[in-house]
Length: 337
Image (cartoon, rainbow, N blue to C red; front, side, top):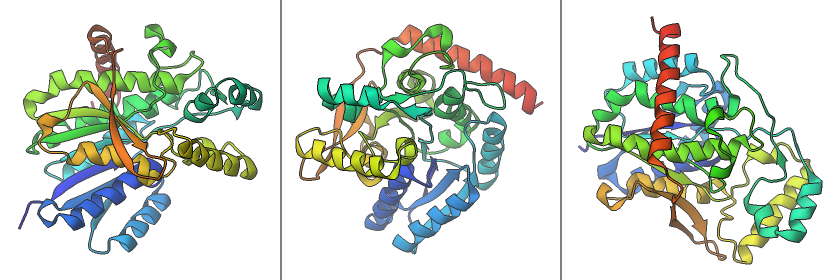
């Protein structure tokens, strides 16, 4: 009997995380020699249980576990990792997927302007989403930074030995096609003061995903970054009224029909790049300095495109890693001593 593979997915109860779970279970059914056990790492126990039930309804013979994790709180990350270390002797895939795009409100004035000047950008970027500044967690970290970056960084550090116990572990960060260097300020690496903290955080994600390879490849741990295209998840939809949510959904499909290939719309389509990077063999065929993006043809066929990361700066990336290491050490002193 083949050895079972362990896949941990953060934020797996909805959106791209749920789509990734669906794809992995389908892969496990289609490839009996590559059996997969899922671990849904979620903040809300009820939603996690509902997601597990929905997945088991689609794939009744699957093995699915749940661990509670709030990536915005380092204390929760430590507790989750301790539980994983008790339950498992290895992890083959770690999907760093959970994240937030905080929104105070949608600026319809900007949306109307973009509709006239640059309709493509309106449907592929977040210019009209007014993001809050200075929002922090209960532990004093920048909220977007904690959710989108640091919680996962702590997980990787804590689970490194389990990942190294795999024959070929893959860490897959869900990035964004909207990641932008011009929104990043090295003095504000916690994304507290910038106008677009989400885009800045995803730029940092790109840098970290590439830079970690120099630290971890010797242990046969490989890190990659993907993006789901434009998915109509609740990350923005919850800030719209019912009518505008329907308008957004319809507009995304219309844009796809007109050739805007980023409009993946559904979580199943958006998760294709995660699935691709997780299952492509041999691993040497995957590049570590590109972002694998989910794209879709007008008639609905998904594909992966290698988006170049020409903005990658090794010194900037290593400076960031050093800052994260210092921050991690502070929390280890606080919670683990």
